[in-house]
Every structure is written in structure tokens, then in C-alpha cells.
Amino acid sequence: MEQTSNKKFHYAFLVILVYAIALPAVFLFSNAFGLYMVPITEELGISRGAYSLTQSFNEIVSAVLYFLYARIEKKFKIRYIITAGALSGAIAALLYAISGNLPMIFLASAASGFIWPLFSQVSVGNIVNNWFARKGATIISAMFTFSNLCAFFTSKLVASWIENDGWRSSMLYTMWLILAVTILVFLVIRDRPSDKKLQPWGIKGKAGEEAREQEDASVLPGAEFKSALRSPKLYCAYFWTFITGLIVYPVVYAVPAHLSTVGFDTVFSGDVVGLFSIGSVVFLLPLGWAMDRWGVRIGTTLCVGGYLLAIASLLVITPSMSFLGPVIGLAMGLGIILFTVLPVFMREVFGFKEYSKFMSYSVVFRTIGSTLGFPLLNFTYDIVGSYNTVFAIFGGFSAVLLVLGLVATSRKNPLWVETRPGFQGYVGEAQTAEQA
Image (cartoon, rainbow, N blue to C red; front, side):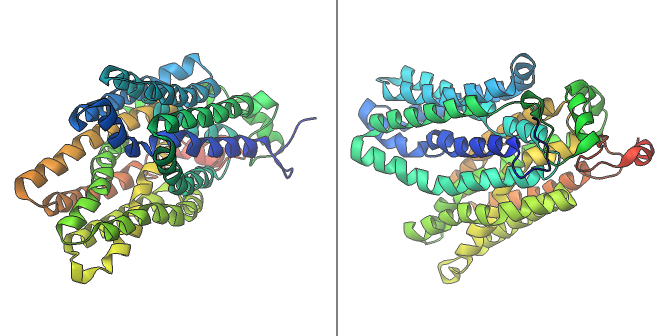
């Protein structure tokens, strides 16, 4: 007997639950990785400069895989891609645990470079798009809210492992934990509802039956990459992702150093940084609900507003204005969500037909932005002795970011329209013909 979307339970929620559980387990390796630098470099006698090159190599591997993601997806099921991404985390942890020299660290770093491209945002977007006809932004927000909550505790867990049992044992514990969730992912997650003889959650009756017939990407609604090349919306969207990479995380990582420069102690800086995660958790879920109701541009606009507020506060904060610390923490937590909403942003601009290609290329541009943002920020500091110059410049870039987002998501001359009855955003045949 087939399940339908009007029953209390739908297999889509089991898929998302397992994925949500797996995300923090796999990111246990990547998010808490900074804790390993000191013990690894000290035990192996590696300079921190040489060690940082292994992380640059990791970024290169990830960028190449993001670029190739659309081709990989044509040959393998998303379920297998996600499983491979999780498994690469376990392999990387094992390689680190047995490493005895710099070449082995490079090899382990290359393995960990597979995690984000195969396991995270592109694949998450694909699974949510396939399984949910409605509330996609809310679902993605809920998944990453849970992941952010777990990240607060998993860093403490890794620190405890390293302190009590050593970094090699910590890597082995991580390996076994990731292997466990890898098995769970492979057993539960499926590419599409039709794999379980279901229809996407959120639609009923005939609309659901039609949805099954339209699961082939060639008939899904959405823009084609070649035709989109002639539209300014594509260039606005990709420039938007580039600037997001350029200005967000380079500033996030510079906040503690800036606060120290203007006269605050480490405890104050740590409290501000801790509020980044809390801010993301507080804002992410209601923001997802708002984007499902009114479109992604309300989310991107509020996130840019939060980022601008954080930058303005950073430019004027002094020890006598310590009340701005929580403002910086919570506002930047809102700004960081610009990274999380990327799958929703790309779906709204380009639709479903070639979603993987549009999405994977966008992450490549974002990675390039981050790669340039970090040295730009730090070399400027070395020259002028302050972060304020770059903070002000990045504040200006965020205004450009706001405009680019509004242009890319404009309802005027859209690159696609939803043509599937029962799906969120369906406009009906008359309106579809009019907008075309």
C-alpha cells in the first residue's frame, strides 16, 4: 500500500531526519578541525605555515569537485554521492590518525576535501527539492539549525577527546562515529519519492501522480544553463555568491583579532564569537519560514542587514562601548546565514532542471571569494595596522550584494516558472503563458 502526503507520517521526514543527524556527525571532523593544529604540528615537527598549505590543498580539491558535481550526478545516484561524501570523512580521519609526516597529512587533507562537495549543500538542496513540494526553505533551515546547535557541543567533545586520549585517538573515535552515520545514510536516504513508490510531501491526488511522471530532470521546470548565459540574472547570482565568500567568513575569523586590537580580552572575544552560532540558531528557522511564505529575497535582505549592522558596530566599538559585543555577535550570526540560504537562493533564481550545475558552480565562485578575502583582509592589516579599512570596504561590498540579490530574484523576466500543479509557486497555465 502506497503512502500519500495526507497521512501523518511521510518517508520524506525520515530521509531529512537521518540527513540532519548525519550532518553534525560528519562536520564533527571538519568544523572542529582547528583544535588539531597545535597537537599535530608539535608531534610531527611541522611548521604551521607548512600545515596551512595542506588546508589550501583541501580547498583546491573541494573546488574541483564542486565544479565536477553536475557530471558526477549524471553517473551516480545522489544517495551514493552522499554516502561517498560521508565515507571520505571517515577515511580522512583514519589517514590523519596514522600520519607520521607531511605528505601523509596532505593525503588526509585531500580526502577530507571530498566531504563538503559530496555531502553538504548541493546534495542537501537536491534531496529537499526532490522530496518536498513545499516548505523547502523551512526544511533546509531546520536541518542546519540542528547542525549549528550540535556544533556548539561537538567542539567541546573533540577538545575532551584530544585532552584525555590524544589527537590520534580522537581521530579514530571520529572515524567510527562517521562510519556509523554513513551506514545509516546508505540504508535510509533515497534520491526521489518514486524510489519508495511515493509522491513528494506537500501535494495530493492527481498532482502527485503527475509529479512522479515529471521526475526526469529533462522535464522538470527550470532554466537551462546555456540559455541562462544570455541573462544578466545569472551574472548577478554568481557575483552575489562571489561577494558572499569574499566578505562573510574572512570577517568572522578576524573578529577576535580586531577586538583584541581595540582593547578587549580573550574572554570577551570568545563570548562574542560564541554568539555567532546562537544568532544563526535563533534566526535561521523563522527566516526559512519567511522565505517559504514571501520568497528568498526577504531572507537575503535581512541577512545583509545583519552583516551591515555587525560591520558598523565593529568600526566604532571600544572598551567603553562593550554593549556592542552582543550586537556584533547576534548580527553577524544573522549575516552568516547568507551561506546557508544559498541552495534556496539558487533554486528560486534557476529552478530545478539543471539545479546541480547552477548550484555547484555557485559554490566554486563562493570558494574563490573566500580564498581572496582572507589574504586581502590580513595583508591590509599588515600594511595599515587596522582592520577598519577593509571592514569599511566590505561594508560597501555588502550594499552591492544587496542590489545583486534583488536583481537576481526579481520577478520581472524570470528565468523559469513552476509548472507543476500542487507545488509551491505554481502559477497556473494562463499565468505561465503570460510570464513566458
